[in-house]
Structures are given as structure tokens and as C-alpha cells.
Length: 166
Image 1 (tube, rainbow, N blue to C red):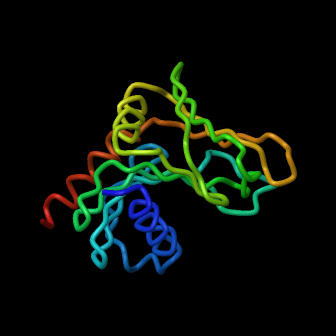
Image 2 (cartoon, helix red, strand yellow):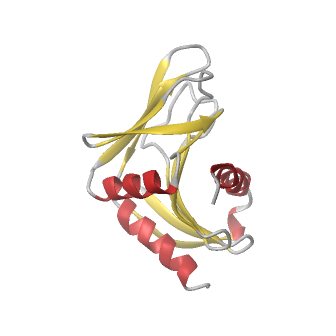
């Protein structure tokens, strides 16, 4: 699937995440990560927020790993940053000793392709934390951090939640 189509699918996810909680099936809570399923459109995802409230947040930050059976997307990373980034500022995801370059629009960031998504999810499975860093529109550097305890189980629960529907 083309990268633009993937970005549009994620944009739909962003809109859907803001919808009523009753529209989702909770698949489980695992540490700081939750797994959920939406029926229309069918999508399942693991999601977490940073562990502490961020004072300068303009957006509610989160990290997700999603499965979209319809378009055949599996294990797709999406990160909502706490602020919109400066145009052309690099976005770096750090997981253990690994670094990944992400692409983004405004406060949203994704892996550049499915291969990078797979590498990121594999790294998430063996690390205890991750952080995403960039520069805000005002030029200041910032980073959002996430604990990964429960992430692998939540990612698996989300994938199984959609597999059972297909």
C-alpha cells in the first residue's frame, strides 16, 4: 500500500480516536498499554499515553500500533506528539540503543514504510521504554517518553482482536 494511502488511513484513525468510548471494544489493559477494537471501520490497536502529564502540551500525546484488516495494514506505528513540530524538523524515535527516523505532518508521526514499522515493533518488544524527539514550531527541542511494559501483550491482543473478526 502506498505511503500516502497509509497516511490517510492513519488520519482516519486520529479522527476515530476522538470518538465516543462506547464505540470501542476494550480487549485488555496491559501495564500502561491498552488494546481496543473498533468495528466500523474495523481496526484494532494498542495505545499508550506518556506516564506523566505534560504541562506544555497543545495536543494529547499517545503512541499506537494498529491493525487495519480492510486495507491490509498490520503493526503500523502512529505517534501523536504533544506539539506540532517545526516544518522539516527531523523526528527520531529511540528504543533502547536503536534510533528510527519518522515522518510527520503537524503533531503526527509515522514510520516511513511497513518494513520500518516491523523493525520498530520488534524493538518495542525487547525494550523497557521509548521516546520520540523533535523540535516544536517555536524551535525548542522536546521529547515524549513511553514505558513499554505491557506493550507487546497489548499489540498481540489488538492483532488477535481483528484476526477473530476476519
